Image (cartoon, rainbow, N blue to C red; front, top):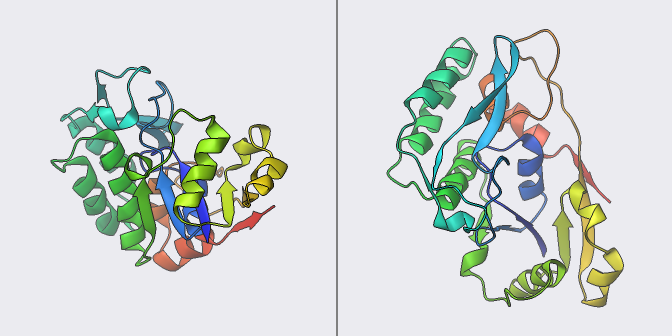
Amino acid sequence: MKVAVMQPYLFPYIGYFQLINSVDKFVIYDDVNYIKNGYVNRNNIIGPQGIQRITWAVEGASSFKKINELTYSDNTKKLLKTIKQNYAKAPYFSAVYPLLETVFLASERNVARTNCASIRTIFTYLELNKDIFFSSELDFDRSLKPADKLVEMCQNFEAGTYINSPGGKALYSKKYFSEHGIELKFIVPAVAKYKQMGADFLPNLSIIDIMMYCDKDEIIEMLNGYELE
């Protein structure tokens, strides 16, 4: 059994989806403090001048609140308009834009739940079933150090392997996890180029950009474009 844990991001980049695709159980870490100016509520797409930031306002945003305690603004008109203006001529716009609307216009405004919906929507579109859980619904000691919390979350699923993003290399020790009966591995995402709006390829954009320009088979191939080390 392989498990991964990550904070919930809004329509994240392909590497996030590769991480989910690499495991049997994926845990959305929703009961940790919100990080302002991070990627929980924003991401990058392509605009006429290159990379363009899209942001969904969070009401009462505070780093002293948990992600699952916060709510998105009801105003998504400008956000949807920006996406529509930039991708209206993309080959898969007519199939993808309505999916984005189901997330941005839903009555659910909880940040963690909405971000999870943005992730689930992609996998449903690709006809892939993934087991996704919320950390807030798991039984583990929240007073522990970060590595020990992850160990306990893995133990919830009797997992033998924990897969982390590349950034975890500076934080977690394979030896420490091994001492607790868990193999720690790090995902190494491969950058797959595809035709975009501009002449120069821009990597690590929101999955929105990939979906607008690639068909389902191409995206699924990208999801498998990673290595574990």
